[in-house]
Image (cartoon, rainbow, N blue to C red; front, side, top):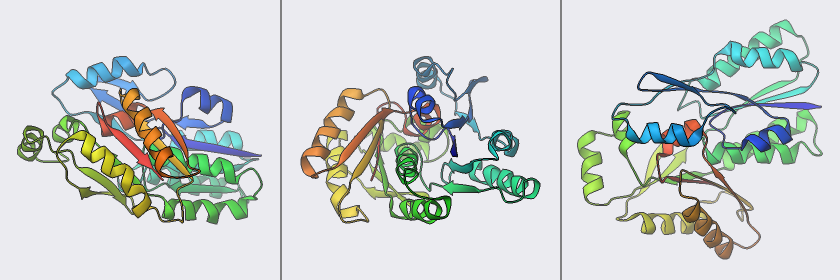
Length: 277
């Protein structure tokens, strides 16, 4: 028996979480003083409307060690796996590690492993899907090194249609963001050991998305991409077209498409596309 615990940077749906027996530990997100919990009760459309209209930065609070520990304590008889957003992007991983140590001190012999996905959104989703696959026929001692290897081999890329949230949250200078918008510059970003770096700059969203799909073959760290996860924010039609392109270009690949949850929507913003392979 096993238990998977995840923070909500993962974009699995409510139905998937229930069906797969995964338990979310939610982030809290504040917009104009109104606090949203990134859980099953979040009205994602209402949240996105509020996010789009505000001129103020969005504030997020990661789960506490206690949030993780109270779920761990209910599952001490199982093999426990906790997955979090990249430790370079949030304190969620550190909270999970504190809870892990407390559990080890309290429950001798407990089997527990915290996974720093070194990613978010589609990348975090893909790690959990890979973990579920490994759990079908492997022991705890086999799963831990195997899922760590998956993390090291994974690549996450994204293209933003709107840089409003990045400007508001101070991720890029307002002047640089405004110039990028005026010139219709849509950069492709890529993960590097859990941090976000610039991959390529293009003019126009279509050009950047096409180049991101082509980059899968060049940037993939294994022989062939066998699983691609794709997260989108309010642009399902575009996401489905990208899925078709990926399937046409890479033989035998499975592409899983999902709308972002609350936290990932805050990073990717309206129109954003995130892929992981």
